[in-house]
Image (cartoon, rainbow, N blue to C red; front, side, top):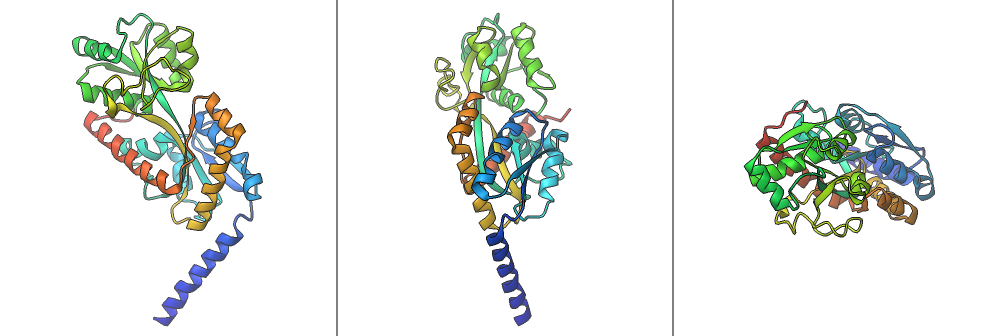
Length: 317
């Protein structure tokens, strides 16, 4: 018994010493998608401040594939020493676990949350020639006839937002999945598809240019970039408040002291004037939450999208 207690005590001292010495080498930030996407932009913005804030640089590594699952599994199985961090999306941290039965990581079990970094609402957009001028008119048209909506892919945030609205209203719109949001937006502007939910930053200029119509933003309050567009709450659908988001996490069992320091550096990076301005330019709102806040939020998001996927019988392509 004494040996066991001594071993536990020694292990505790070792972890404490390790946390005090950390970081002693560069920190790897793993991005689950190709360079230039939202996760990449957010991850590199955070990484740009680590030398200043932690005394060690951050090295960004893109590991795309399998809807972000390759990178997520890699980080989940990395040593929990604070030197490997995942910066990923709503899909990686919540939707994948609902969509894929053979997923080789569990977002709640296998990660130590660091921070919910940024969020952005979706915008309900329609083709220019669609008669509906409000969410209510769109919902009524969907019940009375066959509408179509596009998304950036099956199981994407924009797809599940539309599916959530359909489940609430009993709509019958046909889903047209694309490989990415750009093609979907092009066909909306070309009057080939009736409507879609797209990230605010991706469509703001098209809306302001009159190339598509905006009926609502999926937020609780109006967004400063589209102040004349009502919220989904104003339209009478408070359960369709949805944000697309990016967050940071480390492997589970990373010492709390190290997670706390990663959180502090991440929050300070995101709240720096230049990073905040960069995020705002691309339609992201900086959250920079605590680790506990992100952990709670992630669990709620996993539960929410699991219900939507199961009720809709949604299967990956």
